[in-house]
Image (cartoon, rainbow, N blue to C red):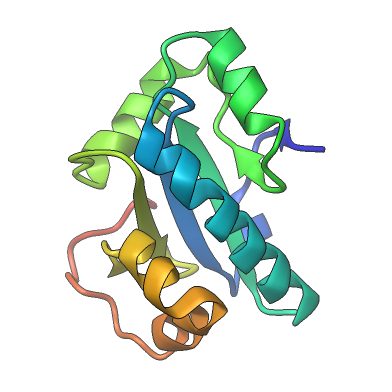
Length: 142
């Protein structure tokens, strides 16, 4: 079952992190989420160092809880609106669904994670794991 917990940077060390901005009311999000779940599960089965962190753009706790209950990864607590907004601002969130892929230092590897997964499925990980950060100053961890 999914859970919202505090994630330290130590937990993400050596992993590729996909930050998933989505909401239950978003039709394209509901179409993409099952594909991301299947990709995530496949990568986990293969032992790949990969994690997804969900950041909800739902309108209320009930919508978040219902949608997130189907997800196998971690999430930023819905009640922590300040943190959710700060991460969205830092990563220049423009629309939903958005999957931004970071290296373990929090530097952006891909701002196109959603089309990467749609096209390549779990093979997107191989592309991300050999990619240099896109913008040297674009880092979520400070």
